[in-house]
Image 1 (cartoon, rainbow, N blue to C red):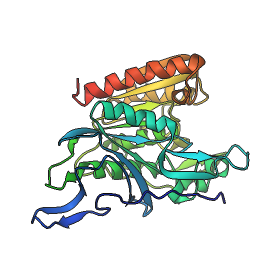
Image 2: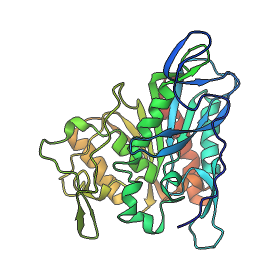
Image 3: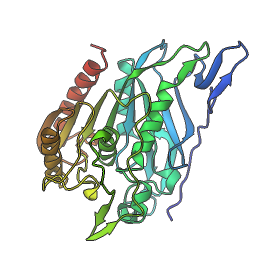
Image 4: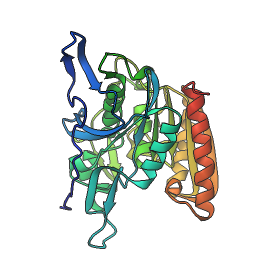
Length: 334
């Protein structure tokens, strides 16, 4: 087991749990109360599988009320600063609460636009730092599944943003104006977070296949959509779209996958995951539901958002511009 060197920033400056009341007599039951001085902070909340996960929250300086919000779903490297101390290409130390350079860059993008952003960490609390090595395969992969575990984290973080209030009870985020952005494994989790559950056939059985083996009892159905509804918009970077046949096979016409909302997607031509993603997009077009704004990047490889030189770097700059244009438009900022 890789060891986790954890930097606990803790529940700084505000209540870590949901408050029921305060000294002024306000009824803040079910709310996360944030003092006016709070900007960046970390707290822990319990996801649908019972795991307490860390969520990094960024509130731009001098923020008022009813801001747009974004949930950011990390890729296979996790959201935090980490290091590989034994040179096996797998991170074995992590500073929980200290965002990686990629995630810090997106935090800055959102801060600039006055968007409240939240970065849930799906891995370390479940026993790993990265989606790497034995964690890519059963049974460990099921513990961090993008198909039926990480979408619970996405909905949990959506609920946190919806229930953030200042000490006077004013909402910090407008509850119906929250989007989601994700990379690789996190983008795959977005697909399950915007899946139209009304499309599930009555006799559908939730299974996944790995190396010719079909798993059933270990596989959970999709997390229930929040009563208040889901995300307003979504942006995916180079997702894995096969889900090991969780929704059926998108390349043989058996997939039930469709979405509840429009989404933007960025695809790298030199990515082994791209073929299945094209199949998924054809499935979405055929099945109905949300529409996709699709961008393909010739010569770019998987994880190009986290690269700053060469062809990948050009793709990164262009994709970030397109992403922010999409998000600000969909969230009514411009």
